[in-house]
Image 1 (tube, rainbow, N blue to C red):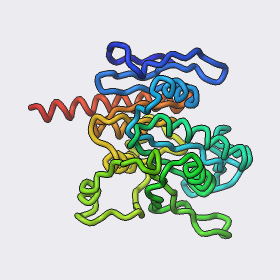
Image 2: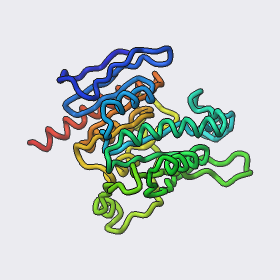
Image 3: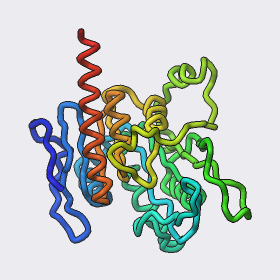
Image 4: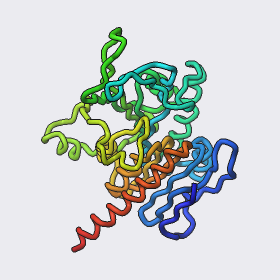
Amino acid sequence: MRRYDSLQAPESAFDIALPPSAQSPNQCVFRHADRGIWLYHANSMEIMDVLGEQHPNGVFDMIFADPPYFLSNDGITCQNGKMVKVNKGRWDKSQGSARNHAFNLDWLSRCQKLLKPNGTLWVTGTQHVIYSVGFGMQQIGMRILNNITWEKPNPPPNLSCRYFTHATETILWAAKAEKAKHKFNYEAMCELNDGKQMKSLWKVGIPKKEEKQFGKHPTQKPVSLLNRILLASTEPGDWVFDPFSGSSTTGVAATKLGRKFVGCELDEEAIAVSVKRLTKAVEDASTDLAKEQR
């Protein structure tokens, strides 16, 4: 994977140097210092450890995490009218409840340390992982602000006909600590909801066709979902981190909304898609800015 440097800039706190390992090249593959975008092809735990040492009081205003759901255990689903395995990859295989929870505690603790005192963490998941995540948040002293149910339209049918159709995911929103004064852009959320208070039931569609023009990621989230999350809990210029970036939907949405982004992803195919998506996001943001200045 080639290194991408769109602009040269002075050394930054996010120019992280890590030696390559057998599991990861540990390198920055996309860097746009003017817009505040860094993407690393690296092990997220190692990146978070370095950032935690550099910023003991926290550095990010918001973190969005879409961790492994641990559901790739030879189950089946329906895709385009065909029965297919739900296996996403080795990274998504369950290691047993105890080891899965230990992993969740590891990355949650690191995220908590990287948040600014009033920063917040958003985590998506299904029943395979989200209860462990919620319990882990409570164990390390975070405060769960909302349990949001994300309802998806037209979910795939349940082929076994032995369960209700899986049509939702859960999004947990948590503050760094019990007494933290988290940011919530109440008026912006009311504006998105026809002037009414927004409920914790969100109906948001799957990623649009154009969001997958550079390739598909098996757990890709829609840009519209990240737009809402960012608008709810950040301001323009705020720093956002995603430790499991996937195809970098968080980075695309952050760039569009004028937030700054640091991401980390281990899968090489996802990194290749991310670089293309972030490149286009920067180009689109520059075009939009040029139009505004005319």
